[in-house]
Image 1 (cartoon, rainbow, N blue to C red):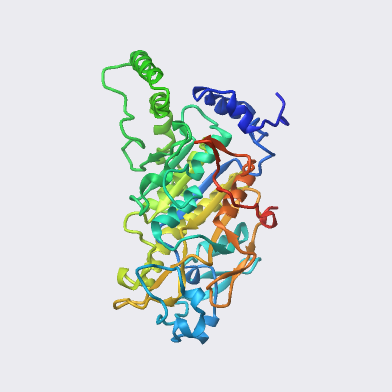
Image 2: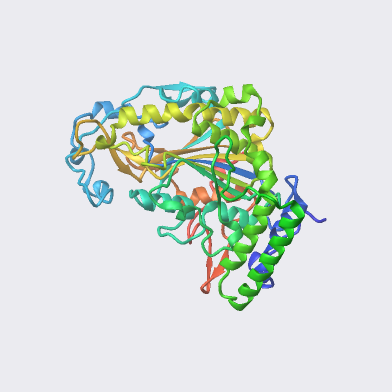
Amino acid sequence: MRTDLHLDRRQFLGHLSLGGLALNEMLANVAGGGALSPLSHHRPRAKNVIMLFMCGGTSHLETFDHKPQLKKWAGKKASEIFGKEDLEGFNPEKTVENCQILPPVFEFRKHGECGAWVSEIYPKLATVVDEITFLKGVHTDSAIHSVGEIIWHTGHQRAGFPSMGSWVTYGLGSERSDLPAYVVMKDGVSTAGDEVFQQGMLPGRHQAAVARVAAGKTPFPNLNPRAGLDVEQRRKYLDTLNHLNRLHRDRHPSQPDLTGRIEAFEMAFRMQRSATEVFDLSREPKHMHTLYGDNQFSKHCLTARRLVENGVRFVEIMDGAKGRLWDAHGNRGGLFENHRSNAARTDQGITALITDLKARGMLEETLVIWATEFGRTPFEEANRESRIGRGHHHRGFTLWMAGGGLKRGLSYGGTDELGMNAIENPVHVHDLHATILHLLGLDHLKLTYRHNSQDVRLTDVFGKVIHDIIS
């Protein structure tokens, strides 16, 4: 089979019915082994993604963006340091002019051969910084939690568009027919809700499968076979149900969700055995459990490795969704305790994931992404209660990635000396999306879906690939 074949996606889709899109997955399966899929636009550097999303807006100033100059201006009002244009657009419910400049509440040190600055709250992650690509000049379009989450996941500011994971599976298909291509594990419902995992106008098969990781429980609801029916009987039962569903679908051709429902039933049938095995952490040796740790986030990280190892294309772990745990306002527990406890809860699992993937030779083909909806302001909140906190900040913050063909041990871009604005090699979320797709062999300009007479894409009408961070 040719591996240098290039197809124009719009032409290709124009000759297929909605049901025929399953060919996408079949072609991807045939290519396999890291080869160029007939629907790829160029040879990929990565074939899987594990995304770690910290809900609430993690402070870059308390994690990876060392700004000692904040100590010099500590106590000054924001209006004394920044111009009016700098202080507009943060939060319509709050004013920031009288907020006081706040120095970092944690100590920073350089780590690794690359000399990356890391806060004291991430002692384990500091040991693997030579595998990480830090992006320190990230900016986005909103300092509102729900909007920030939606932009990061879908590239748009309003709900209803496909998530990044859906775009990836749409572009590359699935490696297996008995496991979902896109899996989400979370500890609650985030501010934006589960809309951020939806497939939007894409076919239903590209919606995320939201899984739970708990001993003795199935990862997906209603997955256990019905008592008293063997495999052959269940197959006949499902065939009859699908026949009736297809008759109903054919009477309503404008409802693509009906096709997605039929495909979901088929996938559930195939997953009754495979999913249970992949999510069974008791199959892991004791030293793996020791490496990752035993809290829920650590179990999600270990499960993520098992999922990509078994061919799942895109995995997201959403941390702190219930209650926006990383939202470090003064009236939400305070910056100090908030970030120290959250980092302690996630440090071991993240570090173990990178270490484990590298040891198995999987890190080069797996793109690990650590993200959050925005950062925190260089100044303290004006209306805090009794504890120190920072407000929402979208004009300059830090994200990082590892593996997947990236330059290792790199810190790219930066904010000004007070961590306010991205000024050195600024990177918008659209640029990150374009780069992530590029690493997976997809051109963000060509990965489109025709909807309501428009070509919709993850990057909207923006985005450029950050070639400087690619090895």
